[in-house]
Length: 462
Image (cartoon, helix red, strand yellow):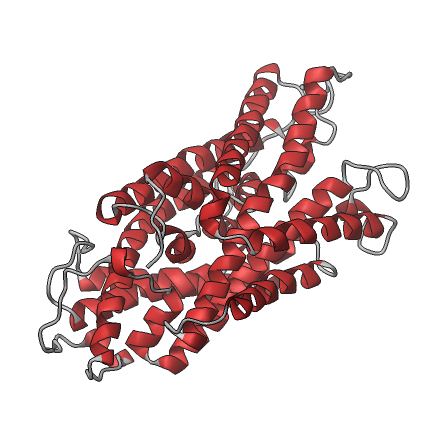
């Protein structure tokens, strides 16, 4: 049993740091491409949906643990696809339903394995691994491209690899910064989460500092009517609706809101879980909507051509003037460089989470030597760094991995919730007040339809 040292605030900080990593940098681009109003509708619907799915995810994790114990006591069951459309209930011998998260942790992939069988659990974990490892590639890209664009190294001047391309003088600067990033994040991955509390709080403050600077700087530019880097008149006029670009913008929003599947690694340290976990979820949902919405609504009206990473638009920030003062340089460097350092806190959280999933799948609850745990953490923290050595375009990265949350979370969580409700009928402390099986099926089938639509759109653009 782990030592529970986190209260409501620390749990909120860790959850925010898991979610607000690479995601918020791409949101203004998403709004500018898909349309302001359409993107806002997507954001509202997804925030409401994510809040509901997060709450039922807690119930799924708790009941999956109870069912796992039942299997260990001799019960035999595996949920089949046809069972989703049945009204039958499975009855089991009495079992202590009062046991809660205080006694255990269970990862998403293990829950899927308990309910749908080990083969499906491994398949689910493979998709989850692609999702997490792709996220880590995005983090490495943000750090290395941002620093290469602002700190001169090889050529004596900064270098934008997005403008000059991979096979250019920028490449060596990008590799050098990627090397330093690798040293830092690998070290942090090997440190236990509860030992990172102060570091994670500082990084959380940095996140809100960056977003505040971007939002209020853009509001100032909008009021002046000038461009972000000169006194020329701004011609920013974003469209309100652009359904044709949904396959570009929507995956970015979905990706930016994903954090729930890393919850088991974080929440195992939270005290008084029955009172704090739902509060953490609600706080994260409201916070993400307010700040993400502000970024998406303000930035496209201030900047003519929003970059895939909005921080890159601040490279020559002057606040609508033809010259730059100390404040302009300060804003520019904070917005450009802080996101790079900011992802330092998100990277170890994600790599630890996926390592925990594989540890649980391979070794179960077996106490394994610390050496094996270290090896797992090293594997899942190093692979994305190797991929980042060759792939730097965050837009391409988000296109590839931005759709995976639809399967691992938006499709599977409501279906798994139906399963545990059919398998376990006694009330538990984490039961959601609202449950209607057709609603969960609508969410899952709707998410599946959206996934097919987005994939077909990406294929047609190739």
